[in-house]
Length: 204
Image 1 (cartoon, rainbow, N blue to C red):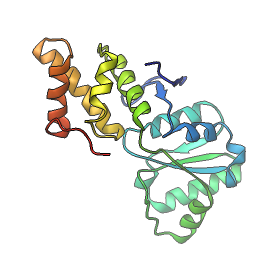
Image 2 (image 1 turned 180 degrees about the vertical axis):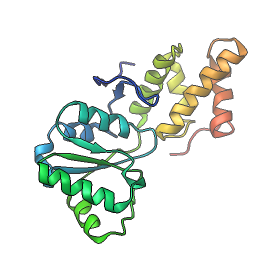
Image 3 (image 1 turned 60 degrees about the horizontal axis):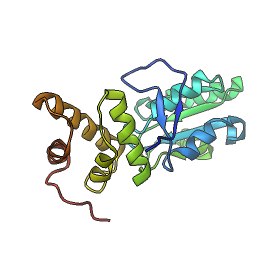
Image 4 (image 1 turned 135 degrees about the horizontal axis):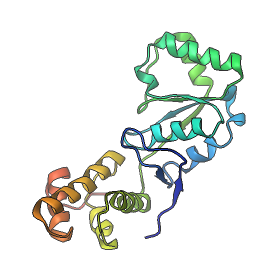
């Protein structure tokens, strides 16, 4: 399957790749990052599931020269984040604020109102096509030879989150190396059992 990807002009950091798989879950986010002048107050708040590429997109945005970013913003003291927002406004700088999965509870009223006024961007859950592209891309990064049939078998049986898909491919790679056998059906089944439990089709 041909992957839909963008190559990000970044050195790897924290084991993040420099290629991002595009799909329905993140395409609108990537498009919005290209036009920060259209954001309310030139500020956007990006949230999404673990391992969905939020930090990668933040680094890409900063590297593009279009603005600044605050990653893992949900872990910062709210006063610090409030001052960072104000500083960006004073400097005329576009600001991307990256947090975890919503809902994101904010106690400080002034910060809550400013965050609420910003453009809200959220990375969703991969559909079947994007999940297949993710499996292929992750396998390529590991030098793991997975045929197209692997994704066809794994997707109906695997978890749909980015982190779950990443863990599944990592387990296939690990089991294949440990057993010194190619990653064929027996390895796929063993990896599924290790990550998501018994080999039963996912109910839609």
